[in-house]
View 1 (spheres, rainbow, N blue to C red):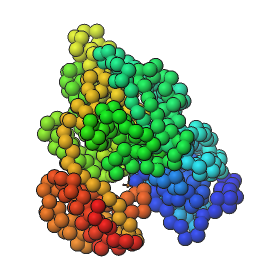
View 2: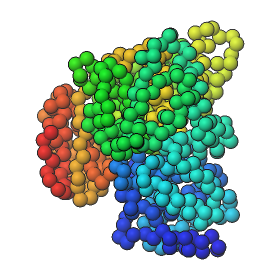
View 3: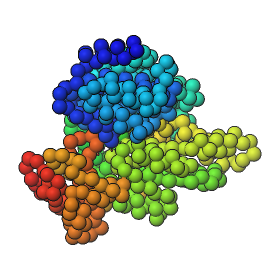
View 4: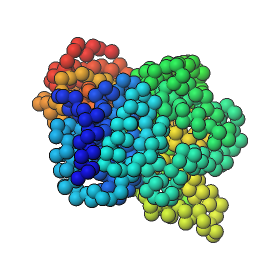
Length: 542
Ligand code: G16
């Protein structure tokens, strides 16, 4: 077959480094950029097969998101803009590691009964890493080797590419598959929402955004004119000087629990940080005593779900609202959601693909990881009910207002995946409509003090977990040790899990005081180091 000859010919230009093993993890492939050329070419082949298989456009985003500049990676996007189906992740790993590429390729074609004469379309995007241009070219080479059509969107955020894929496959029903279409849809909805806010001062319209020195900064700039000054963004860490994700960005702020470098914070003002591909967002401020306050994914989920629940009640719509979290969710947030808000709460494994899947079971579901990765999903039936109500001429003003707010909420949200830009607009709209300050939002519940640490081990797969990653089943003795350490502290909880994006084991601990959370996190780190094959220096107390 001519296609296979072409693959063979082209693959010589994208040789696999000997002895390298890659794994399609939490959010796709990710490692040092210098090892990825062959994998990118091969993922171009896989995306083309997936497109033929689904008879739809598939997306390939070249990014390593929150990882350092020298890393890169790739996220594959399925037809409705969601992460690629887990069943195909196995093929991605096989293909990336194959010594005999054609045999593995033919095997996938046979197993999935793929019609090779079916047309294929692949959308490709990339972040601002210096390696991204070269690596996205390797993806495009893979697509063309199998005679697929490609559209190169160039520099886009990850969620923008997810959006494009969904627009394309819904034939424009979801929106127009262009950047202009994306900005228009989101910003028009934002402007409609904020019309429901009472007169806001310029100070209230001001938001400072840390762009993590990445793609999010470029895209916020591009969007600004569409906002018609209803939101005034002061951008810092915009990539003009600093290094991507270095001492800035959502991951840094969340894990370090401190502000990014690169600017001075004014007490009481609102700030937010994106991550390297703008699919995560966290908010923060300092109080008059200079104390730093973080509003992470859990606080965001609480704000969004409260707003939606109130609107649904006002609209008289009986729709089931749920919040999906992970094991990292602060215990106080889960307690507040279940006991005060009385919403259904589910816990899923880390990785938005797992949260997204769990959220699809409900009429309206807010899913967020504590690290700020999340969005809201509305079932088709829920959307229909909201639209019908908004057009019903026989309803009272309160119901009408609620239905219209819900309709615009659907449009401001990027339902395909967590999206820092879309989340930011929705959060800003909620605060404006409720006339709520960032301090009032923060005061809804108090976080339990917590700490996240990383432990370097020889092979992170030594740790295996169960119960949505809340318990370790290996190595032997790990969970018993964690349990006995947790018992030493008040209101304590801790778990360990291997990262799917970095070569480390993650440790999470929370307790009644910061000292206790820090001490517990350290003790659990030591246990990981000793029981799971730690390398380098033993973890030191904080
Ligand atoms: C990715 C995933 C997130 C996950 C994060 C950390 O984020 O999309 O769902 O929480 O990695 O995962 P892990 O703890 O397995 O390393 P991003 O923003 O880097 O794509």
